[in-house]
Structure formats: C-alpha cells, structure tokens
Image (cartoon, rainbow, N blue to C red; front, side, top):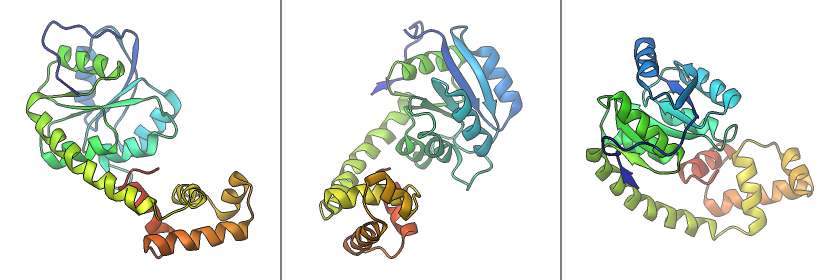
Length: 229
C-alpha cells in the first residue's frame, strides 16, 4: 500500500484507458481536461447503470469513480464495482470523492477499489494516482490511509470467520454454493458441474443447513458479505 505520490513523480504507465464516473457533468468535463495526456478518457457515466454498461463494453484500465451515485439499487460506487468485476475483471478502480468519511472509504475499498483520493486533489495528482493504480499500486490520500489500515485489520478477522464457516462445507458443496449464490439455476449448476439436478438440490439443502440459512437469497447475501463471489 502506498500513499498518494509526491509532486513531480511521473507514473510509469502510459496510454492508460480511463472511464470517468460522476453525476456532475461539469466536474467530469473539468477532470477530463485536467488529466495528463498519457491518460485516454474513453468514456463517461453519470449513474450506476450507465457506469456498469460503459465498463462492460469499454473494458477500461482504470475507472475514476465517485462514491455517491444515483441509480442501481442505491449502492453507489461500490455497486458499480461489484456489478462490473465479472464483465471486466482486469479493470481497476480509483475512488475520487468529496467525502472523507471512514464509512465511505472502507465501503468502496472492500468492494474492490484500489485507491481513494479526494476531489481536492489537482489534475496532476489524480493523473499520478491513476498511473499508480494502473501499475498495480494502492493509492490513498495521506489522511485516509488510517481508515484503510483499520479496515484491513478488521477484515482479517472477518475472513477468518468466513474460512471457519467454509470449513463446514465439502469441496463439492463449496462449488455448488458459489454458483447458486451467483444466481445460477439448478439445471445450470448441474450442467456446469456434470451432476444431476437432484444432486444439486441435495447439496443446496446441505449448504443451507450447515450455514444456518433459509433461502438462496440469504446465501447470496452471505457470500457477498464475505467477498466469496
């Protein structure tokens, strides 16, 4: 994990394809003009649904993402990341927001963002942060780094709990669990794993019983919360 790059440090990556997601058109336009010439803005979006569509079709290297966005189911920037990861797995996300609250920072990082900087950052600072994220680094405005460190500490405990729960399931039950939680129908799971629909039903019943859940909807929520999908 690195802090925001120092002034004068140039990112190693060039020709980075970027999508800007923010619900204020004036901000998007200003940011586009302020970004370094090595960054290619290939698209923009103003809400969750448009962002998910743009990322799926354009498959950018980095998405500059506001935390609070209209549309979708109300999940904002974190929802954009969760909805887009399967369609564009190589895309990385850099949150850029006016908010510096711990809840917003932790929420979007847990969803999968590689960094979080505030809108008080200059165009050159944002450009360096985008280059760093594209190169695989994690970038945070200095005073936000503490939130992330605290969150990682808490997350390690949550992951240990998730591992304990997963230990209750057999290897086949884990495979079935992940597919069902992703929304697969029983017949689709059967085809994917080359087993019968009846066997799928048996495994699902066992998974729900062992995890003390009552429905596949609860199973999906359980898996999402533990970032198992």
